Image (cartoon, rainbow, N blue to C red; front, side, top):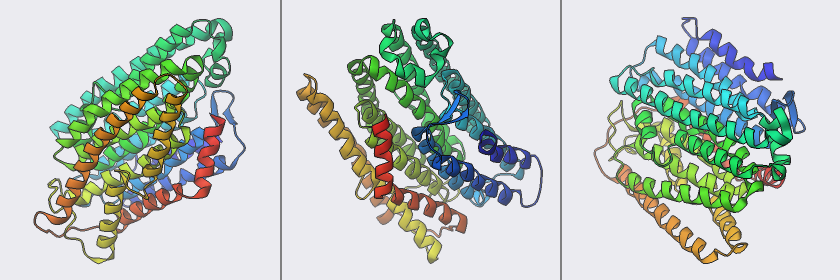
Length: 473
């Protein structure tokens, strides 16, 4: 099964070495084959041991991997017409797919890892490969941001590694070398002789993960990188790379909750609220699409981790899936909206004709309204469930009034973001001059895939599946 999971990436790696005339279509087709072993593994009983106790497929991991594969397919479809919107050579196309293959291998390993060390290796592989995908855009800004990302990414993964070492050391007296296993740590968390050491390690690891997701205090580096890179690379950052980070946070925080749920909640809530406070005002001052979407992604990741530690597992998973489909779709839409790099917000939703143009206009409008949680967006439901979970946590403690006040502050910050998105949408639709914009079939197909996936998240089957993961957690 491990060979089948990684085979599409290896095929993509080999195919990207050849300068064939139709290599773009071949590489895009190979990306579709990623879905086949994932769907097969998705249907098998869980947990399924892919490689001993080191790589284990559970319901959480398979959900994240399935969502990531759908996003990957949408991104590769948009790559077929990238040269219609920006200047890119065939060599850079192949370079993108070459490192996308390495990225997918690292992502798969990190999501399925049941070992903290193997998780870190997968995360590091995914991080390093994205540096070279940024550099496919041959501009000074892209090369500068690629180096910045390498530095920030190194800081993030170093903090993660240091925290892992401390968590391993805290449980080694009772578990020995098995103290690296997520499942064993979770089942013996209440027996850890040095809970304080584990909590310090978890805090350091969490900060490393938050750095990689653009949380406080390093909030602008992600927006700068996604602005400098080609928009499909930005879509990968927002929709897939954060999957590897967030699944690790889910697993680490589950263990930390057993040790002290109160310490976990206070730490994550304070960090997330501070991050959203800063992001809300940065979004209010955003001047172009990429920065707007990038900063919004940080806000949603902060909500996901907040819902998760509040016990709103279902809300966090639903919000994660909706964000993973909505945000890459919006990033990919910038290829058309910005009209060959001229990122003018006013009038961006004008000038579309024909079936493809009208479909693009309708779906982009749907995605823009969905990302601010207007119904029937899945985010509307996830936020209701998530804030409800936070109230439930407060009811079980002595902090009900402070929690209600904190939620009101959080809702006020989200209202600022809501206002900015509505303002931009109105400017896109009603202001500025109209210019003709061309939309291609593969781009519309990618958007339809995202729209169908979002709709499927609202089905009873999807709700039951996510609730099943929450119950197991």
